[in-house]
Length: 543
Image 1: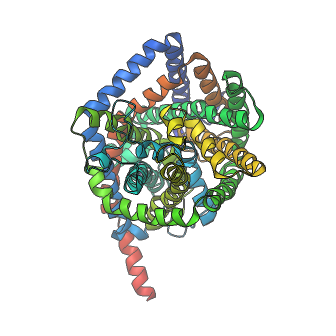
Image 2 (image 1 turned 135 degrees about the vertical axis):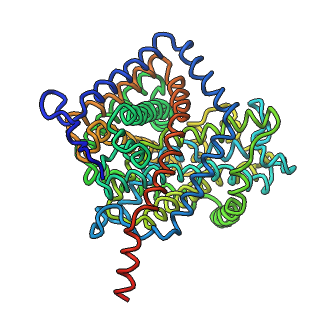
Image 3 (image 1 turned 45 degrees about the horizontal axis):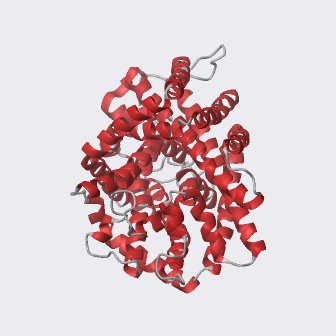
């Protein structure tokens, strides 16, 4: 397809052998510069990043909303289009991984740690009606007069939670993953973000434009994983405090970061087929045990009915919710702090998760890819969120002192998000040994979900810097795997993790522009691809 070979751009000798030397040096320099700038004056850096993010949220909310809706409709079109039978690879290629392994890795890389962290806290926040943060907890419910802490508001709470973890977010991952898999495996271009721009700029992808796009993806991956790791160990430390009385302070959190980074690096070095796949599969099995606890020890019949009702409500309202833009200052503040924040976070993580999804999807058809990536992880996530959030909401609905007095709302509104999960487990059973075991399992899962995010991120970074080599040199996986942990630990000690998380969200703006170009380029390339006609003729001949 291209007149150039990306392999010619990779160093053949020296310490950078196996990587694009310029990209490798630029990536390290970029990471060091942002970390140093942040820790030298955390307050100043935080102010700069926050000002950029606030401007994006207040000025470009409509743009982010339009991007999310556009990508979701592109996904629906491709899912049912004539291009669905095209394979992501040669016509005779077949999937590398079983469906279970594939789904496990999709879920682990995409949403695993997020829904464990927010699974209780977010639905409970939307259920509350106190407006304790200066804006309504749930303007979607308030707008139609559903302001009492009752079953109707509970449905709205789950609808809003599903909205932020559902089809709109996954559409971002799907488009990036499909573009990379199609151009990388079908068109034999490098498995990097730049390749999706080939229909628009041709061989210029190997020049400064391509380098800038890939470095932007490296930025989102490094700081996305590092800030999530740093912020997430607070919940693991809370779990260790519940279990063993360990001080959940900075020292414990740095030790956790170190241990997780070492394990994740070993996993990344062993490759996708070994460490990453095995840990991802174990995550799913262990998660099933925790889910079973929430389902069986909670109000089982009520939870299942609540799940069916809330899913139907989400599906019925997902399109109008996607087009909703805030009107009043309070609603604008809420939408910026939640919906636009989420869309920015999904976009900033898009290159990382999308590339990992592409890496594990070689040999699948476009339709199989679309259906599998769009619906399986979201269905699992919805059930998870309903079991976790539903239990907490049930406790608040039927609390002995009246609705809203069970204590979970108090934990969330005190912004002790790590404690909300353990507070719910504590109220689900009076059997101490089960309570302890489930708290231990939740803490273990927090660690293993983070390991799969970190090792996936390491593989993605080194794949991009090696110009698409899906088996990048192991020594660079070690460097970047430990580097992610080092960045997280340094920022945690300096108090700059929140600032870098804000910077990562701000970086979603240029990535979103690349996303639109990618989607248009993919549609253009598919329209010029005659493969689907050959597939159709072959099917008719067989019939």
